Image 1: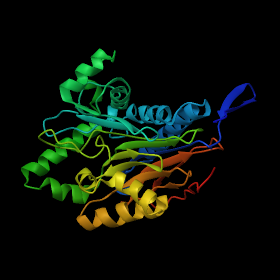
Image 2: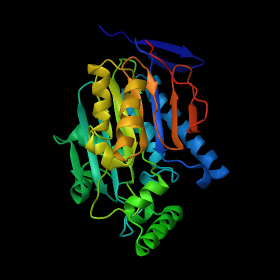
Image 3: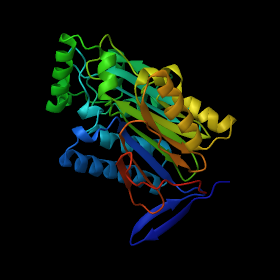
Length: 337
């Protein structure tokens, strides 16, 4: 029988169960110091901290892990610094196409959307697909029809336009005209920006969620790993994973589920499983990126093979811990009750 315990301190109610809640987030791998400014860095750190606080508030209130990851990602989708929601990159045709997914590790329920362009917070629509439909993934106009049926207010596509992302597209189009292939540009740029969140709630339930604007200058309705359950997002009873990187490679190796399978079947730690897939297998194929990993025991890993990855976590002390570059000090929580 599960027992919940409530604390009241200074007029604030905190609901506790038998597990210590923890929330882990990322704002994308591929961060490069050369393209960073003090303003962007300060803004990114503030946004990560806010997302951690918002998500952890759900856990402190005794809510489910799925509520925590949804709350955290909504904050990042609303911040134009990240390639998700408001800050989404542009396709070759000058549009914003958004993808998102969420998975409940305790039930294996999942929801995903891809190629939507009028949904302010795609993670909320992915959650609605999981909670209010018999399906796992919906795409394009069909997903937006479902959104209106669920009471979502669609926004004008201009909501997603930011000058920074528009200029990134203009540079990409110039490279196109100069004959520089997309593959060559990706290998040189290594900038992604997908956002993700993982949580363990007080009942020990795990959840994972991911949201992205995709790839600058993408064509032909391209969809990456972020909305694909098992590739960019996965959660079960043993672990939760959200990826960020060159999606084609994450899809080919079913990266998120492979990490969880290694932890469950080979009894690897989050750090060991993450290294095997993110730092060894994917780079050997020619891809790059990162991931956040949360084990059922509360252990956390954040492997990445780029110069930086926006990342952070929050636990029992209620203090957000964030980092950006590969040499930033960031102590990670180990296994905990």
